[in-house]
Amino acid sequence: MPEFVAQDPDFDRRVRDSFARQSIMATIGAELAAVGPGTCAIRLRHRPDICQQHGFLHAGVTTIIADSAAGYAAYSLMPAGSSVLTVEFKMNLMAPAAGESFLAVGRVQKPGRTLTVVTAEVIAHQRGAEKTVALMQATMMCLPDAPDRPA
Image (cartoon, rainbow, N blue to C red; front, side, top):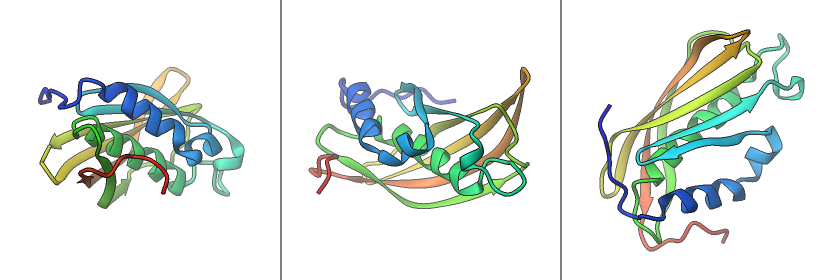
C-alpha cells in the first residue's frame, strides 16, 4: 500500500471533528477507530435495529460506513479549509454481513487535487474470525476553500 503525507499537519483533528458532526454515525452507533494519512477505519457493533429481515447488517448501513471510511481517508490528504464530497461509488456486497462487529477500512489509491480514488473494505468480526463482506471503490471530490461546516 502506498504511503502518503498529509498536506495539513492537523488532519487528524479535522477528520475527527468532521466525523463527530455526522449525526448518522451517532444514529447507527459507529465510532472512528483510526485515522492516518490516506486511511480511515470506522467500527460498528451489531445491533438488531440496523439489520434487515434476516438479521444481517442492512446493506444501506454497510454502505454508510464504507462511504464514510473512504471519504475520511481521502479527506485526510486534502488541504486545510477544504471539505469532501462523494462523487460516485461502486459497492460489492460479497457475503451476508453477519457478525458481532464490523470494521470499514478506507484507503486512498490515488490522491488528486480535485478527485481522489479510494477503496473501502468492510470486515465482519464473529467469534474471533474475520470475513470481508463488502468492497467499495469510490471517487471523492475536494471542495477547496469550503470549510467542512454545516451550511
